[in-house]
Image (tube, rainbow, N blue to C red):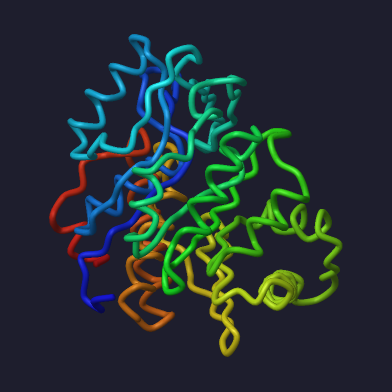
Length: 302
């Protein structure tokens, strides 16, 4: 694997329309992640499934406009393209209403995906796209087909009731890195029967999770307070970046893309955290999850 890149990086899972209060934006955490990986200079690819409907065709057009290849975007002849209704509170924090039984629930394992899995340098996946047995089996097959040195990033993204302890346990068991937020951490720990209470609870929780699943890195995002990164030899708190928030949709995916970029290149942990915090904060100042990235912003976080 070349240390300097560019790297082949896959966002594996859902692709959908985020129906925001005043606009319709392409969304889905894996696709957002792939966009930001590509925007910063790597070869980001979405692997997903859309419907054979007008919303699906519009997504194809929008992906092309964002510079994302559609080579691994499957088309389902029956299930509709995914949609999510997004409402923002006074601080710009989103709540999601996710349509069930859509095309990405039927993501299929096939020879093109098998060939791709054998070549990737990193893959990011979450819990939502594993809500159906079909897509869950495909995601597991993809992860199993990657090379031993592939970076496998589990970006937890708990959504409504579309997860289970089994999904968490299996996903963590095949990951190199897990990223989650401070609200998700106690939920995940409780679901897995891992206790971490009392003073230093966040650090203890991250350490318990890392040790239980032999993870290279646990990354905890803390919103405006920054992030906490935990490896076998280091626990680092990195402060947040003060910005005027427009909405936070996609900010976590942007953070994960920078985290992955720097980890692949062997950057120091402090630089990794600082760059990821900075980029996630910038995306939170923009409307929608995939804004155009100015050269000065990209240069500051690469």
